[in-house]
Length: 160
Image (cartoon, rainbow, N blue to C red; front, top):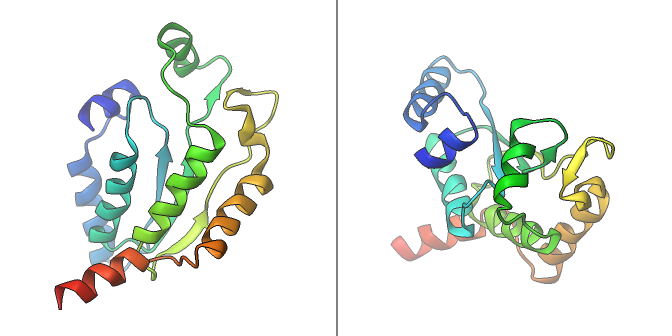
């Protein structure tokens, strides 16, 4: 994670994020976290671990994004020189479905994808089809009879 933070110029640490969330929660301030799936060199397991970590912080809401490479940004230059893997729409949808299974059911979902300006996006171009992405997530969850927090409930049940 440190390597990813440096690569995307995060300028803060996971510890500083965790400490700030705790301070906000102590003051009864709601916390909505944003996560980005598809960061360079991150695995599916890492993306799921992010959700599990946020569960432990007792956040109130979440916005899930896919990494978008925008024109005229440092990330575009990095991508042109390094061509790291960009998640396919199918990969993104499947990862989000798994993340939702691990996400505490009390956490409010504010966003499952974004809708970038088509003239700004370099990759992935499928990001401009927001409703297709949302429909795919819904279809998989419905077909498989999955719900937000299923894995959390399953874990609690197994611990009893």
